[in-house]
Amino acid sequence: MSRFLFIVPPLTGHINPTIGVGAELLRRGHEVAWVGHPATVEALLPDQSHIFPALDDRLEADIQEARQRWLQLKGIAVLKFLWEEFLIPLAHAMIPGVQAAVKEYQPDVLIADQQALAGPVVAEDLGIPWVTSASTPAELIRPLKTMPKVEDWVLGQLHELSGSDIRFSEILVLVFTSPLLVGETFPPNYVFTGPILEHRPDRGDFPWDWLAEEKRKVLVSLGTLNGVAGHRFFGEVIDAVAEMPDVQIVMVAPPLEVPRNVLVRERVPQLALMKHMDAVISHGGHNTVCETLAHGLPLVVAPIRDDQPIIAQQVASVGAGIRLKYQRVRAGEIRGALADVLTNPEYAVNARRVQESFRLGGGASVAADHLEAVVA
Image 1 (cartoon, rainbow, N blue to C red):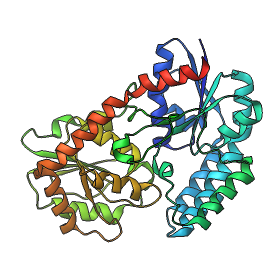
Image 2: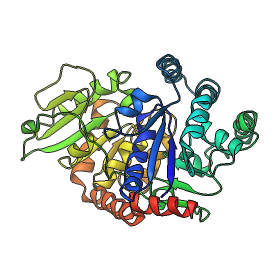
Image 3: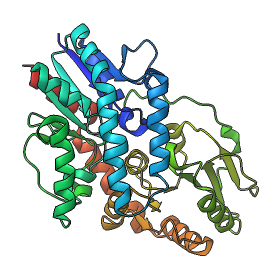
Image 4: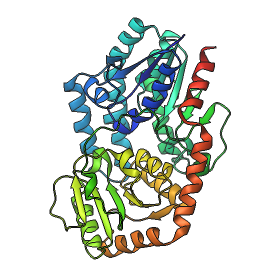
């Protein structure tokens, strides 16, 4: 049997795909461990998981504070801050912990999230095979190709860190989506597994009896990082659905004053809840979008920043939802888009088409097959 070590940043959406892959490897008799910020990782992984620390609480707090400042920026400043104040400092902060974990655990393969650049740096320095966990497909399509100077600047950041472009492994890139959404051709070492939802703990209670069978139900979420900053958007959604009494809304948000057909919770068991929903309103976070489409549900997507506009456009292009402008959208537009995805069957048909493409990807089983092949 082999040892596999996952390197993850302190970001929920980037940890989630590794959970199912790791659990499948464990089921096959392999040894599996994670490296990251212990408190963040422990909250998401199954009990008794093997975790090595690579960020202490102070460093993690500094990283998260930097990310909150990043959320306030616009334009090219967003990209500049992402690399100079988040990704590169995160890599430097994690390298000592990753080095210590590798030396103690002696993994056969290292699986690094594409934003946990410390993983490839350490793997190449120590001569260990490494694989990319592509938790978002945005960079796969070279989003900066129309801005060559900016793309060269990003490459320069990577070369200063490691001497090469280490975003994607030459051995294996696990991509947790479908080619149907990404819409391009990739080398054979890029394996599209679909989202990995198996084996994920779905913690959190929920008042299930609040859901009414005769009403259509919609989940509203801006993800773990944007919820606090989404006050205006949440308010527009509340105004939009106040005149839709046949619809129930479950809103993942801080406490708000809401009408009777809206339930606000700061945390929900999202995967379990998806089975009861008819549609989702989202910011376009990759995890939420893929979880929604994996349940065959249509979306209303209002992207905020980062990879979200790319993912939102993928949803719209495949006909599985409607894209709105987060900063400018008003209640009437939200109401119209939501009514459309709930009543026009084409959106649900296209969402189920993506759902089927995810199923064909093979999920955790296919990911584990390819990881085992790296060791063989």
